[in-house]
Length: 159
Image (cartoon, rainbow, N blue to C red; front, side, top):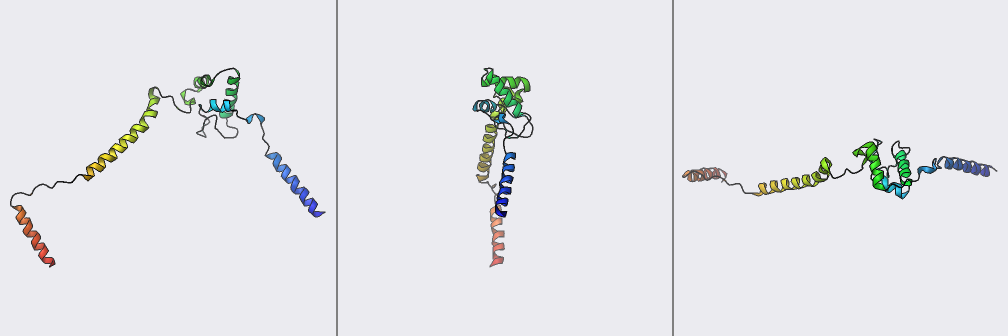
C-alpha cells in the first residue's frame, strides 16, 4: 500500500509540474512569413541585439507587438518591403537590422574593408622597413687604421 501511495504522489507532482510548463499563449507561434519580414527589422527593446524575427525573450515589449503588427500588415496584403517601410516610418532608420548602404550609412559597409587593408599595408610597410640593411656611414680617411689598432689592443687583453 505504501509503494502505491508514493507512486501516486510522484505522479501527482509530475502532473503539477507539467501543467506549469504548458505554453501560456497560443499566439506565440511565429510563421515563416513573419520571421522573414521580422529578420529585416531590429528588436528595439534595448536588452538584446536580435531581430524581431529572432528575438527569443519571453514577453519582449517590442518584438511581440511588432510580430503581431507584421501579421496584421501581411493579412492586409502588404509585402515585406512595405512592412519594413511602415516600421521605418514609425521608428526611423534604426528600425532596420542592417543599415541601408546609402548616404552616411554607406561608411558602415566601406570602412571595415578599408581599415583592414590599411592595417595590412601598415604591417607590410613595417616588415619591409625593418628588413632593410642599415648602412653605416663610411669612416673618415685614416681613421680605419686607428680603429683597427684599438681593436687589436682590446683583443690582446683576452689572449
